[in-house]
Image 1 (cartoon, one colour):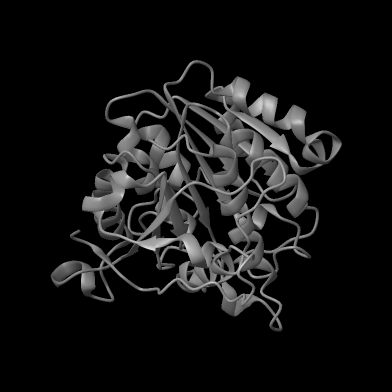
Image 2 (cartoon, rainbow, N blue to C red):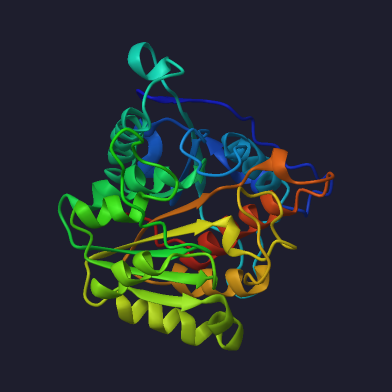
Length: 320
């Protein structure tokens, strides 16, 4: 497939033949073979648009490594369905390969790949990369149907695209709104992390904001509020910015802060969202391994487990 290249050999690190891990079951495949699988992984190793600290370009490799060593069994759902890895989006030759190519150019490149992935029968899982890639990952779903997005994030990410600056990791949902987004919900938003003007922008458009405190009170009710905010849209796209987690659970992100949700709360909510029939795509973004102190790999492990929980909830649903 144009724009994707193989970057990983999947291997399960366990020597116990009973320990089936994602590394044992994920297959390498091309876009032409994607229809054979329930879900496909696509890496997006870019962090050019990060407002804060960079490092998310190394996210896809770290997420794959941690997912490879994750067992496939979920106590309620059993093992996951069939999964393929299509590789990483590349900059290609020419204008996209230059260091000074704009983020808008990069978004257009990613969107072209995402369109082809969405056109398959497999469920797409995008491994970021910075949050600016949410726009090209989800935008193809606006072409034919009404779309709602559910954003697990400490921030709303509805900043304006400023002339001379271009898109950033803080603009993807403003860009989606301008492209015709029908519904929006942010789950896990933190107090003192969003400007009043951006909160009002979301409220004026009927968006829903569920704070991290409200998730802590009742994560099932938080899911219900987000689903209610989707109304009767045809399809739903779910994004996990790992800074939604408390800094103790995900220190390796661009903007770690206290007061976030727990990994257990995130996993339970993803299980509930994963069973939603309208779910058309999923991503994990802002995993920045170089920013995590020590060698614990907490952030990448949490991101990999988020993928595992979402896929286990989908079972053999497949399709986008």
